[in-house]
Structure formats: structure tokens, C-alpha cells
Amino acid sequence: MENNYPKAYKEILEILKYVPKESVNKIPQTMIDTFYAKMDNNYHFSVDINKTFEEQELLVETKAILANIYRDYWATPEEKAKIRAKEQYDMQIINEEKKKKYSVDVFKKENTKKQDTVNENNLQAEVKKEKIYEKMLKFLKK
Image (cartoon, rainbow, N blue to C red; front, side, top):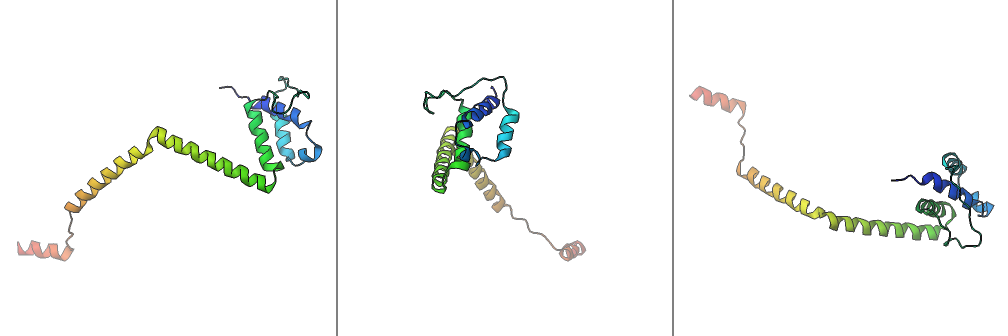
């Protein structure tokens, strides 16, 4: 599995050159410094101004980073709420698919059956503790 994040950082920095300065200023400087520090200097990427943003050939990681930047720094509160609701919905769908795929419920049913048999066995064997003076009395009577 190839680590494309250094290349994505280079793409991000190239794209930010075409973004208005007031929008770039909303991104924390530490994040931009991290992009500069960790970018792949040997990777060459340039934005084609004749193409729309959607037509640009970007790495998946670049799109994900840009989506996070938009959500965290550029979106309005209403847009942030919609994005977070969509992310939660998507995670819920993914978790439901995992449950179906891996049949987690099967294991739960087996565990409850085992607990039922253990409980039944425990009910049958009731232990009565004798107090120490009762034991001494029994011993003396013998």
C-alpha cells in the first residue's frame, strides 16, 4: 500500500495558490507548515486553469484533505451540520453492512444460550454455609 500523503500535501499547496487569501488565512498556519514539511518535493503537480476543479486529476487523499479543510474551516455552521449528519449516516450504513457481513448476532445468541445453561446449573446447586458454632456443635454431638 503506497503512502500518497506527501504527494497529496504537494497538490494541496498548489491548489491553495489559486484560493482567495482570506480563505487560506482561515486554515491554521501549523497545518500549512505541516504540509510544507511533509510534502514530496520530487512530485510535480500543477493546476490546469483550463479545467474545472472536478476535472482536475487529484489523488483521493488530496480530495479527502480538501473536504476536511472545507468542513472545518470554510463551511458555514449550517453546512457543517449537514456534513456531520451525512458523515454519521454514512458511518451508520457502513456499520450495519459490517454487522450483516460478519454476523455478529450469531455470536451473541450463542453466548446467551451458554449463560442460560450456566444459570440453570447454578440454580440446581444451592450451597448452604454453616456457621462456625453449628459446626462445633455437630462435632461435639458425634
